[in-house]
Image 1 (cartoon, rainbow, N blue to C red):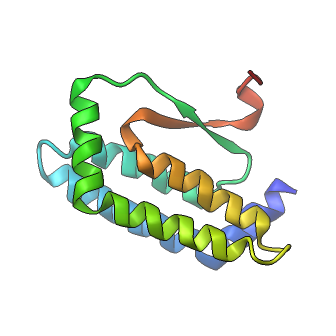
Image 2 (cartoon, rainbow, N blue to C red):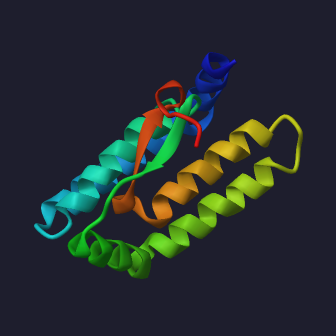
Length: 128
């Protein structure tokens, strides 16, 4: 089922999302202080191509990463997160769109604190 979901996702927006986050990562990497955020945008680009079957995991953060997360939220991140959650809610209105809405919520939780999360395959993560 996740393969079919990934194919549908890729055809109807996943590729465009991946290109957008890849370009955003390049823009962040141009600045020296934005390189960690740029690298996270590259991770997000890899996630949005094939999101089904992956989960968001927490990563330890230090003071500099927390500072960059705050900068991210202040300078556009909060708007991006709000829009991603809004799209997720819109998808969840229909029964067919619920799996895709869940992927948007997963992406939104990552984007809220990009330097404190990563992605893993669902099979690799043990249930807590």
